[in-house]
Image (cartoon, rainbow, N blue to C red; front, side, top):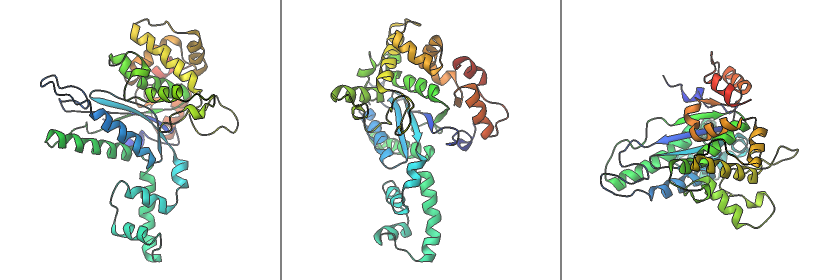
Amino acid sequence: MPKPRKELISVENTPYYHCVARCVRRAFLCGIDSATGHSYEHRRAWLEDRLLQLPKIFALDIAAYSIMNNHYHVILHINSARANSWTDYEIVERWHQLFSGTFISQKYLKQEGQLSKAEMLFFQEIIDEWRSRLQDISWFMRILNEAIAREANAEDECTGRFWEGRFKSQALLDDAALIACMAYVDLNPVRSGIAVTPETSDHTSIKKRCEKALRINNPNQMSRQEKTLYPFIGNPRQGQPEGIQMRLSDYLELVDSTGRILRDGKCGVISRESEKIINRLGIDEDRWVEMTSNFENCFSSFVGSENNLRIACGNLNYQRPPGLATCKIMFH
């Protein structure tokens, strides 16, 4: 029986989560209907545009994504500090970009935050709930999927379910799990034969990162990064900004090298530079290839070192850590 989402997503354990949503319709999310030959490729742009717009409203960042024929992957970072820094007025403004709100919330905006004490006492509970929802992965996925389902149903002139009822999520408990999952997500099109190289795989985060890195001729690491994606900030150091603790150049090198293995079927053949990066993450070279080609099936709801897995499951009162044996093998 599936666990309730609140028992899988806990920002105290990790802010990073790998989410997968699958389409249940025969006509596919974005592919070509083999029965009619009709193409639905334009839906990739629908989904990508919406996916990159929502973080401007939510306190969530996108670390990686890829949009496939009948499903999509996204790695989300929960930014609680950002959500808590917003004023009550900003929370209401952001919520109204998603929904029409209530009579009292509309009055609150019209009067620029001025309500009577009794009204404010009642409305404060609503604002606190909206603040929580604006950093909630389930609400993010719900709003994203509902918008795409409505557009697809209108185009298909039909009603009914478009997505599976429950999206899959995996908690990424440490840097090694995060980077392995990001590489798996970014290399999905290469592995499935849709693209030849990572930088030519349309509607993926790796292509956006590559395009920006090549377009900006500036040695400054931060200026060469795609603004719609969670940035790489380099190796751990004092006073570093918020982001993924790895150099962008190292990550691109690692993904490129791994992509060549997956594409050419030369398992175990990896560049010396990439091997150094993998060793620094605490991952065996052969295990790396296995993870980046089959990440979803390798792990259950939690991914990380044995120690981090035990801590996370202890915080959530799990009697037995799921996937413990696999995590022991994959991470050392």
